[in-house]
Structure formats: structure tokens, C-alpha cells
Image (cartoon, rainbow, N blue to C red):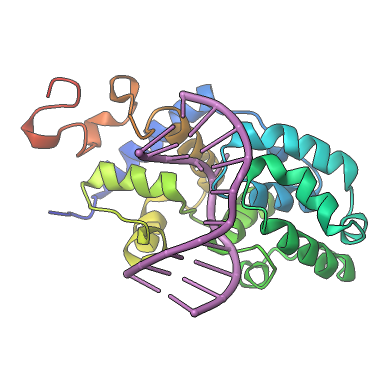
Length: 223
DNA sequence: ATCCAGGGGG
DNA sequence: CCCCCCGGAT
């Protein structure tokens, strides 16, 4: 039975994740690029794709296409070839459309609802971009976040949970208003290293507040 | 066989 | 709600 987390629990989880993050944040070029264009491209390449796998593609891609205009002029086959190793090749067409739209504008919007209008940009990419690269409060929801909160609070999740109002409200509740960026990065990195599909609960900094760890009255690892 | 920084379309 | 996209790592 789901119970909404109280303030102490929320604080513990936030501090646990951010504290862990400070020692374990991954470094990726798109986390500190000055190019909002490249940052946005990165978020799109990261859709359903592991970050480590995106890295080499991102490097080649950003070296080749430095501006929306240069990308808008690229042939579709060329873009497909560049992102081929990532699969989901229909993204190539959307990326090209995106470049055409962006090359007409002066700069990339930072407003969530404006971002949503862009090709290949959905709730996750718009949230991640405005949080990480516009310094605006936004909670992020991806498959990892769904798994994390599902385990922490002992709720059933499915393929469509990521779009549910329940998860949206929960993510907004958990994400701190000020340290949202540190928290969001910590969540991404923690769910990629600790709270993976076969979780490494022994070394999880927030296991004390995790329903999954304490499931069935015992704790994870001791059955 | 399963999973991955989801989006688009029905 | 449902399904598809999809290559690559584990």
C-alpha cells in the first residue's frame, strides 16, 4: 500500500542521493558544453540509449555539426549514418527537422512548453534540458526514475507509468526546489550504477528508506 | 532474453 | 492505453 513520503523521508532521500552524487557523478561532455544546441542534441541521442554508448557518437556528431544551420543542411542519410549505432533511426528525420526549426530562430527556447513544440522533444527532453541547461526547476521522469521511485515506495509500475500523473506528482514532490540539478544528475547516475535492474542494494546510500530493500519483512540479499 | 537519459502515433 | 522503433551491451 502506497504512502506518500513525509518530510523527513524526502530529506533523507534527497541528501542521500546528492551526497552519493558528489562522489560519483559521471562526467559527460554534454553536461558542461556551452552549446545549448549540442546539449539538446545530446538529450535526444540519450533517448532509450545508455550514456556510455552515446558518448562516441556525440563527439563525432558535435564535431561535424557545430550549428543548427550546418545540421539542417546535412543529408538525411548522413545523419542516419552518424547515429546508426544507437538504433531508433527515425530520430534522424526528427533531428533534421529540429535543426531546420532551430536554424530559423535566434536562440533555443528555455521555456518548457516552448521546448515541447520542437521535433524529437518530449516531456523528458524538455525537462532535462531546462533543468540542466537553463537552470530552471524541473523534475525528470525516465525509465530509471520510474524504477527508483517504484522500489523506494513499493508501487507497481508499468510501461506507461512514466506518463502518469501519479509519477509526475511524485517526482515533483521528491525533487528539491533549489538543488534540482544536483538531484537530477544524482538520480540519473544512481539509477545507472546502483539502482539498476539487478540492484546493488548493499552499497545503496538510501536503502534505509527503500520498500524494495525491506520487502517481505526481510531485507534484500537475505531473502 | 532484457534493458537502455523516450517520442510519436493510433 | 497500446504499440513501434532498434542497435548494442550485459
